[in-house]
Amino acid sequence: SVGEDISAVVAEQDHDSRDCVAVAVLSHCGRDGQLSARDRDYHVSELWQPFTPRRCPSLGGKPKLFFIQASRGRGFNLGVNVSNIVSDTSDEGRDSYADILVSYSAFEGVTPTRDTQNASRFVQTLHDELVAHRGVKDLVSSLTDVNRTVAQRVRLRTDREHLLHGGLLQPCFSSTLTRRVYFR
Image 1 (cartoon, rainbow, N blue to C red):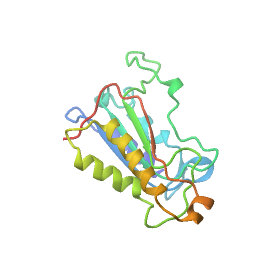
Image 2 (cartoon, helix red, strand yellow):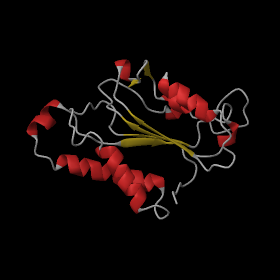
Image 3 (cartoon, one colour):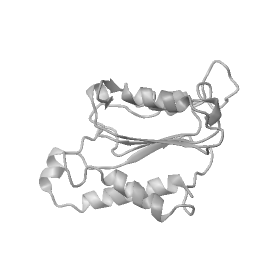
Image 4 (cartoon, rainbow, N blue to C red):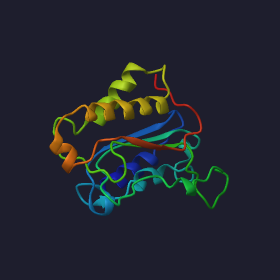
């Protein structure tokens, strides 16, 4: 698949001189809550699994950041299962899922209506926040502000049809980061 192939290719590179890896996916939800690619649907875990320390040692202990712009319709679970996170990278038989952040444009169970003016509000707000506060505000604080900004902008809309037939756009994120991340 497109997502899995790109992640595998990037994961195979030498990241010793890099501080982190960041992957952005702009797609829509396919069958069973998977992300849609041109050739097939895939689970979001296929994006981050190639970057675990066992499979990509040069990113061990470094942040792996994933930003997903896609709906997350009812009954779908595209999140990181926090109960399965392992923090000891020395265990040969298990992978460490520490230092992974996955940020979504919509809360689980939300399928926003097709709105060409607001479809990428999450990506635009994330961009604006990171540029405005680079080097000053850590990523988790910035994502919290993105969540608030996007939710407030959508709630200000008076489009009753949007509220009745679609979900409110509420970004969210899941993080196993072990330290603050700043972009400079």
